[in-house]
Every structure is written in structure tokens, then in C-alpha cells.
Length: 347
Image (cartoon, rainbow, N blue to C red; front, side):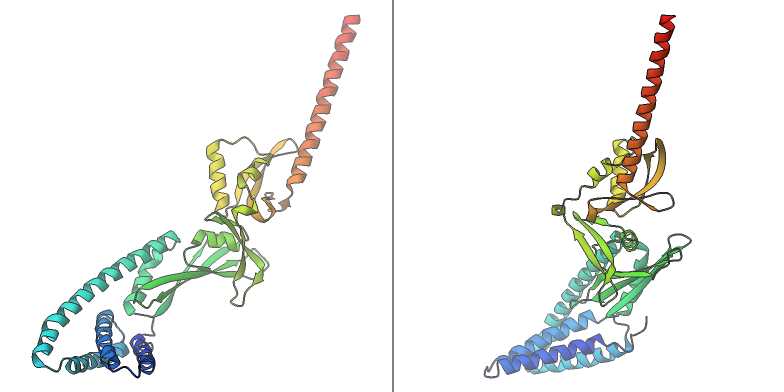
């Protein structure tokens, strides 16, 4: 947690202000009023700084803040040389200004923190907020909160949640990097950075497992054979215009009868990147298979219980052959019965 003695956000802001001030002086060097206007704006900026950094825990920033207070007082004396006006400003206007700005900033900060908490809940990181609060109380400019857990005996997810303080002094959730560690696969561990709120923790697992998810009407899937310079995968997108109909693909399966509620549950899971267990007809018997959404090929990926890929065409052909055999057997049986009936009548 500890760059608080090394990172001086206030010093960075002061350097930025000084740079802008110099640029404005060059731009309006012929103006006689530029100096006074800049001093008035600088006074407002100092007051804003005093409000925003009043709770800093950084020793370096606190020392800088004391210098800002001194500079602020000097600026007040310069802008209000008359004793009466200076007295009115310091004891009435300034106190009211600081009180008002503090109230507005506190309200904005509380609202921003509540929104941040809600974002974490929506993305599946509700329990991480207490850690986030500790970092925010330290006043860090940006920080990373680690979240790690096992999904099963062989798979672990490591998340790195990224936060950054914006220009208004409020913290923003920039996204998270997820790494999937698997002991059952003979391949490198996979990782990807998920920006903003587009994805949640569960979807990050499904995507890194190679499956597709439906987000805001667009199917998204990671190209596990194509990485960018940061080590993240390229995201393949299949919008509605691409023509993928998940429900139609499900209806094409030789699936045992399902009620509408079961169909709805399966569709919801598949849209979230799930792998669903269903019973399909094969060679005249009902067998377990796993299905996944496959938007790129406008169908479904099918695996048997050993997770070996099975083609839909093979399933349908096998069922067709079985049906033909059964039909032929029924026809033979019927013919034999007719023959026996005719023979008995002749006797």
C-alpha cells in the first residue's frame, strides 16, 4: 500500500498549474489584465486544493499543503491590500467558500464511492470493496487490488482490479486483469484485461475457457490464438446482423422433450458462456452431452461426457440409421405376422 511517502499528487498538480499559467501569460502577454485574472483563478484553485487534500495521509503531501496555505495567504494579501476588504474576505467570504466547497466535495465523494461499490457488485467483486476503501483512505493516485480463488481442485482465477483517481479527485474502476490457472490443460496459463463494466467475474472465466458470451446484443469471444502487445487476447464480436440464432440452434438438437422453463434456463446459461449438460438421442438411447454457444459457426459446440467433440451431423445420421433399422425391423415383424395369419386361415 505504500507509495504514500513517494507519490506527491499535490506536487504534480502544482507543476501542471504552473505550466498552464506560463502558457496563458505567453498567449496574452499584451493584455494588462491577465496578471490579475490569473491571480484570482489561482486563489480559487488554492482553495479547491485545500478542500480536496484536507484528509491526505501522505507526509509529503501534508508538507506541500502547508506551503500552499502560506502561498494562499500571501495571494489574499496581494489581491486585497485594503485591510477592511481583506478582513471581510478572510472572515466571511473565505469561510463560507471553504464550507460550501467542502460540503459539495464530501457529497460528491460519497456519491462516487457508492457508485464504485455498486460497480464492483455488478462485476462480481462485492467482497473487494473493503480493500478498495483502505487504498482510497491512503489517498493513492492509482492502485491494484488482488482477488484470487479456486473454482475447483484444478482451476484458479487471479483477478487484479485497477483503480485510478480522476482529475476531480474521485476514484474510477478502470477494469480488471484475470489470469486462469489450470492444472488439467497442457498449455500456458491464460490472461486478459477486461475494461470497465462490460464483463463480470463469471464471464471472465467463461471467456478465458474459450467460450462466448452475449453482452448488449453482441456475442463476444476471445481469440485464444491472437494476443496484443500487453498479453491480452483479441476480442471477436458477432452482432445481431451476423445472424446467430441460439434458440434455433438448440431446437436442431435431437434433444429429449423440455418444457419452456428448462429451455429458458439453458438459453440463459449459454448466453452467459456456460457449458450445459443435456440429454440427446443417440443410437436409439438417451445419452449425456455438453453443449456451448458457437456464434462464429452459428450453431452449438457438442462434447460427450469425456469432453470429446461430437458433430451434430454425426448424431443426426446415427439417429437416422437407427430409425431406418427400427422401421425395417417393424416392417419385417409386420410381414411375418401377416404371413402367419394367412397361413393359419388356409389351414
